[in-house]
Amino acid sequence: MTATHLAHRALVRLTPLDDGEDVAAFLQGLVTNDVKGPLPCYAALLSAQGKHLFDFLVWPDAAGLLLDCEAAVADELIKRLSMYRLRRQIDIRRDDSLGVHWSPVPRPGAVPDPRLPELGYRWLAAADGESADGAWNAHRLSLGVPEGRTDMGDILWLETNAAELNGVSFTKGCYVGQENTARMNWRQKVNRRLVAVPLALSQDARQVAAYPDMGWAIDHLRVENLDPDTLPAWQRAGVVVSEG
Image 1 (cartoon, rainbow, N blue to C red):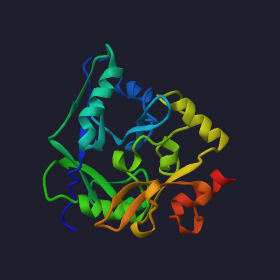
Image 2 (image 1 turned 180 degrees about the vertical axis):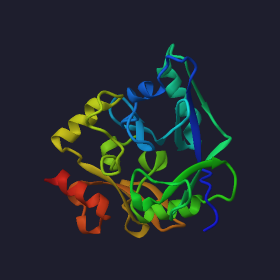
Image 3 (image 1 turned 90 degrees about the vertical axis):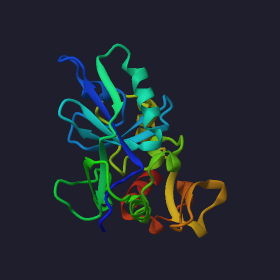
Image 4 (image 1 turned 45 degrees about the horizontal axis):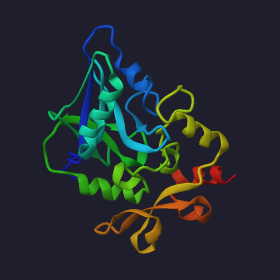
């Protein structure tokens, strides 16, 4: 494999404009994961009801943070974060000089994907080179991992398998959508799940996304209708817990 650039991804840079400004503290009160812990981490910005709006990887930056997000919604994400910024001295803008790169095998300077080690390795470098989008999508779908607005829409964050994919902290404190997310976890009431299924077995009424060229679909199914034996190992344990 020679292509590594994920052309469908973009980077949003958050930079303090004042020595006393803390970008991590700003983001910590908004997103689902602990951005003051080890980075990169997987996180999301949710609606007040705990539904998916944007998911991204948070990377460290010299002065602030970088968000590895879908290019198609990067401007919308910037607008949403700017709304929460109020009077804080933080610059939020897209950085097109950098791109996200991926390889299924280790590469110098690359780090394991924080969602699932089997997803491979990512790094940030100049935004150039042949696109690896097709190989990436085929790889993640084969592992049953949904990603982005196409797959997740406005589905409740825990129903996207966020806990199993290390996309939520239940100990870090408040964030937008935290109340409903924490309640679902405490009650073990994750009634539905996003599941990658062969396209021929997809249910039209429950289908969220389809990838005909790869033979996969993402369905939003009730847990009691799932056969744990057909699920990937990373997802199986979470579904069993939810049923118990």
